[in-house]
Every structure is written in C-alpha cells, then in structure tokens.
Image (cartoon, rainbow, N blue to C red; front, side, top):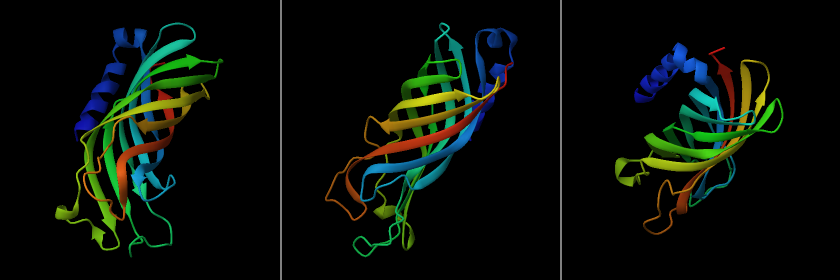
Length: 204
C-alpha cells in the first residue's frame, strides 16, 4: 500500500497553484515486457503493468528534468516447449516501486530523448515451476534495492497526451549467484526491461 500513498501525495501536489506554476505533471499507465539476464531463458516474455505519476520542470526550451513514482511488474518467464532438467514451466514475478529520475532533451516540437537512473524497491518476489510456487526453503531471496539505467523516447500526441518508449537495465545484480548453477539460474541476475506507457498531463 505504500506506493499508493506516495502516488496520492504526488498527485495532490500537482493541484497546488504555486507548484503547478513551476512544474507539470500527471498520471502514467502502460505495460512492461521483461526478462532477466542470468537465468536459463531468453526473450522479453514476462508481461507486467506500469502505473504511477510524474512531475517535471523545464530548464530551457530544449531540456527538462523529471521524476516518476511507479508500481512496476517485472521478472522472467519460460515459454519454450523444451524442458530444462525435466522442468518446462518457470516464472519469476517481481513487483517493484520505482522512482526514475531523468533528463529530457527535445529534438523537435513533438519528440524528446530521455536519459536517467531508476532506483527501485522490491515489494515482493516469487518463482514458480511445474509444481507451483517454490517452497520457502527452495527460494533464493532477491535484493530489496535495484538501480537501473534508462534510455527512451517520448512522443507528444496532444497538449495532454504523451507516449514513452523506454528500455532499462540493472546496473547492480538483482540477485547474486552464491552456489552451483541451477536449472533456472546460471549466474548473477540483472533485470532487462522494455516499457511502453501513456502519460496524461493534469495541470493544464
């Protein structure tokens, strides 16, 4: 529930007159396609949602800075028909609260390039195989904190509506390999994310 309170606070701030004169902001919604480098599988096969809010302010006509607060579903999923050590099904479900901070550079009136960092806090993490959720004694914990670098593009569709296309990659492992490789886990693991979101501006 913590992420809901943060988002509510963020959106309340957008309604303050003094704040809105200097900043713009709104809500975000969209979808993630993710994989985890270091597991036994390839491909952005794990879908998830992205929900939250954003604020930003212009530094010049071409440059702006912004911050977001988002609930993000990430992880990994095997969709191959071939078994690995007798196992076919593997799903890693990770739920984060992310706080991306970015620099935007407008390359035209409607297009901007985004660069930034995205700290994240793990709310929950679980893994599943052919027999269901891993037993607690078989679960290897993930790091609570994640830090991703991000690169993306923002397209303005109207005065209020924008679309973000973004990639993000963990700069630190989300989980370190501490023993012998397992059928689903080869080495240190890093989150690898593609995200498509719609931003709706509220402060106009």
